[in-house]
Image (tube, rainbow, N blue to C red; front, side, top):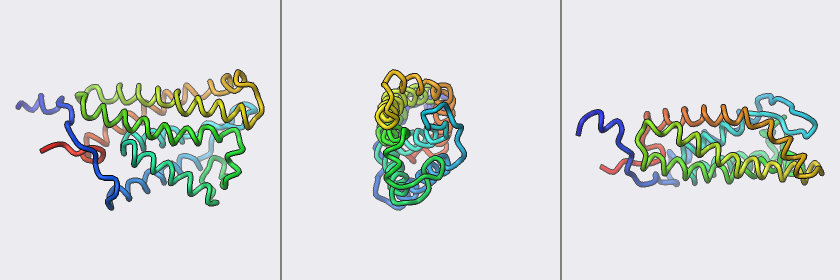
Length: 206
């Protein structure tokens, strides 16, 4: 096998274990990353009360790097911390009352998005050559964002802001340019992580 073939060979692997010290540490680290992304000052947009933050980037990166189970656990740990009273939500908010705000749908969407994009990452890493990782991970992240984060976000805005779905949809459109960039950066970063640490998500068969 030549060196060039090795560089382009898809990873054939089995999932990394979920319950082990390293996995627990990774879940905690990525939950902390989501916290940092959430508490950094957001950009207020319009009158619907949902700011632009780096949360989507951190959530997607967690799923892309850790896979469906551990990525989802990182998001759930972040939400539990916030619901328990720690000021880890956007704008320093905390508690269950955040579920009555227009941002609630996005928070719920993060859980499903981390799970779905984790499966995308696992499939891409197992079956695709390395040069295709970044574009495929980015496409997967964008589709996941649209299906789960944006869709549930729109529903949350409509319910909690008491506006028509059409109004919520128009208000959500402003997040797309930022998501395109954030998902691209997340895909590039995740691909770099998997090249440097090929067993963080999947373990190559020896």
